[in-house]
Length: 503
Image 1 (cartoon, rainbow, N blue to C red):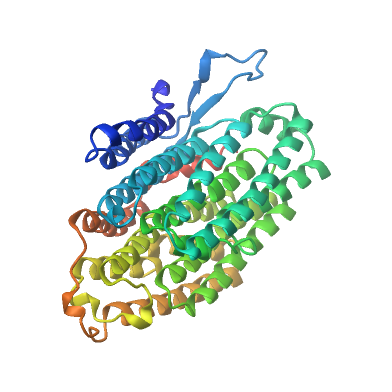
Image 2 (tube, rainbow, N blue to C red; image 1 turned 90 degrees about the vertical axis):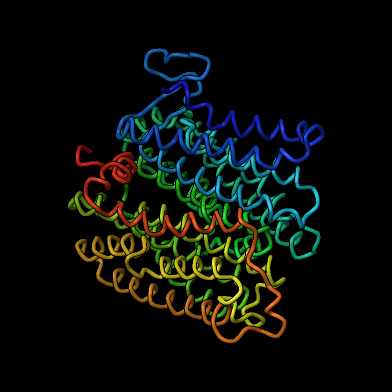
């Protein structure tokens, strides 16, 4: 089965190169290629997770075997966390690709859009499956360079300005990461993550490893748009076409930011108390400041973008709590519970935040605006968009029985059991403010009275509705991952890839 791993990069890259050819020969077919290929990868990722569980698959590119136990070739690795991330990336990629088929008709250059879309998916898949730092950086750049162009995929100055800001800050982040990787190679003489982990966890913590970790936190913090590295995100997410906004918020900031941080700091470095405190503090600040900035927004997509910062704060805070407990030699069961809640919330966020951005795209597609002050009464004319938006709003606000409730509950319980009472209280308060923010969205966009001329507004095309309906169903179905048995199959392999009782 390990021979199938390269397909996660080969298929989307191949589609990206095929689209320009097929566009010339069969113009009506090319836009269906990305969704078709990504659907195959989604099924493959599910199969790998269910069939292998906690096992790790390794594909040695070129067949290069280690020499004296030192890896000299490129390794592609899929464990429980990588398989779960592949599912999320390709799930949102498939539904965003389906949604984009009718949505992108109002733009020129559809063929270029789907080429860039495929390259972005290939880059994110590559970041997840690579086993060495250099190729992580290469795949990261493939995905972000594609996203820079996709954010600017339009004709207004706002889109170009947002893309420019994103490129400048993204370039700074890449430079920080590359510098950290160069120092790591200088210090360890290897780029293989497993090999580096073996070397660093045997040696005592010193100024060099702390220096590397601080640069990685800054670099990947910028990629994930965590506070105080968040300046690019609201403009980029609000300016991009809605399928790309769903990809940026739903999976990109996780694959090239959150995932990379968790993978490196749990699997490669020795957990230290000081670094754990920094990561926890960044998570708390993101959670609190993100929701405060969101509450005053009237542009739907900017409001959702700030909530991405806040919800990722939950994930980083939960990971930080787990790291603090491990660094202090505390109860590993509590650390595992906290990390379980964090990963669960990260997967849940991909679904409900991807859905919210598709909802915003549908509102703009049907009405020509996403300003809440200019909307109202849309539940009468956009029933699918309205119903799915309500489900996503309840999910992100942590209202049962939606999935967001269960992941937030696990994080809060872990914080209480770990005696982080203040952090647990903050998590509850932020969730209440989030609910207030999305009550505002529901009232001004979908309730109240329908504006004059609103009776001419029609529901969006079937394929756009299809993606939204699947995602709102998943907002309910993913709640089942909190149930023992289902949790061990779909969630715990990801947790066990980072931390286990055997550590």
